[in-house]
Amino acid sequence: MEVIDAIKSRISVRCYKPDPIPRDIMTKVLDVARFSPSGTNTQPWEFYVVTGKTLENIKSIGVKNIAEGVAIDEPAVPYSGDFRRRQVALGIEMFRIMGIQREDKKRREEWVLEGMRFFGAPAVIWICLDKAYYQERRDIALVNIGVVTYAITLAALEFKLGTCIQFQGLMYAREVQKALNIPETKHLASCLSIGYPDWNAPINSLRSERESVEKLTTWID
Ligand SMILES: Cc1cc2nc3c(=O)[nH]c(=O)nc-3n(C[C@H](O)[C@H](O)[C@H](O)COP(=O)(O)O)c2cc1C
Image (cartoon, rainbow, N blue to C red):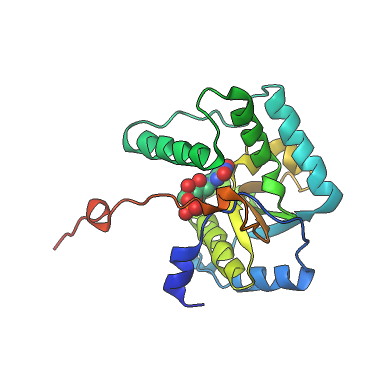
């Protein structure tokens, strides 16, 4: 696949087929992603690929916490201005595609829970890094993790896999870390669901909007 096609055709997949991803395919995706650049080539990322019963357990933790209104690990400050406008536009389009009315609180809540179930993905990847690295070099750490996360989303396309980067997998990161037996010396920095997209699902027809290059770019001579 051409690079520009890959960048432009990647979307966040929010409905997967249950088919498992063969381990050799998943390995190939991560093998490509490890060629990502990192600050002074520190390559701080570590991948935890979670499937099967363990993933079911993580899903049930998320669903239960949301249903019981458990506070998330890091309180989220609401967006404002352009950010809020774009966030609202995304939500409106999502619910329009799924035929969920604004006042239909039950279906909206059910959709949030579907996210906590990783939209039916057969696998979820948590990307961790050394906690000391994260604490000492938070600025560069998060750039590195963002870079490798995106590389996974692109590499996946070559194998007809879809992905969705999901903050939902980090909302209760402390509990997830315990359930996965990830040592306390690690920091869970990124999470993405991965699997074969169900292209018949209406939600996967969502194409989110982008600002124009003119609005985003300042030229300085
Ligand atoms: C850091 C980050 C966190 C995200 N968290 C979620 C999430 O929790 N749930 C979800 O459905 N999508 C999540 N997304 C996907 C975004 O909504 C999506 O990337 C954005 O709307 C642009 O759409 P596209 O990925 O289809 O191009 C996240 C994306 C990023 C980069």
